[in-house]
Length: 178
Image (cartoon, rainbow, N blue to C red; front, side, top):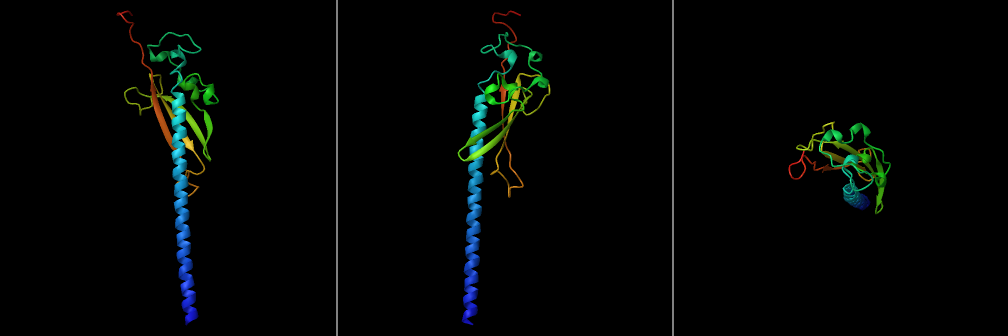
């Protein structure tokens, strides 16, 4: 009988030990996912800040390469068909050059893949995609990492971030000119 009690006690201790190990493993996994998500946000903010230093459009860039006058009609802006062109963030001359760019960034021990998408949005309702030129562009980021998942690795989590950039169009010249 004592042998039976001994086996039962060892089984109970093993079960409790296994439960504790599984609980610790789940906690550690959650900590890694949370850290990866926090780093992903930092990567996204860094890219959005860098994009903020770019010209709104090639037609509005009076400070860099081009020498165009200020734009007052949205139809003068780059068409979405002509978006893209850059292969990396440092290649872009204006916001729409970033369309379709994929950036690999490492922060800490985590490697992230960030996909960029640029599109025109309604100036008064920036969550509405227009498909035609406006004085508002949305830069959307999709950030992925192998440690970002829900439940298990077969259900990846993509972190999405966006920022709307606007251009203050000039509708008349100072002093009432045309």
